Length: 74
Image (cartoon, rainbow, N blue to C red; front, side, top):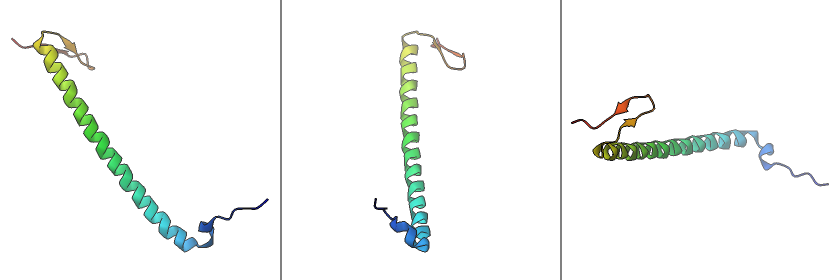
């Protein structure tokens, strides 16, 4: 049975150095994902608001998640 040696185990300084840059890259990727998620949520909110306006135009009563009633104003 052969053991595979981890190449990273031979140079601790190099491992620390590259671990730092890997962590920085991971942070950048997470920030990018968060921005995409935020823009997606904004788009979803716009779609919901358009749907509410359409329902109000056709005289539907909308009840939101806080139990507020939204009606078309005369």
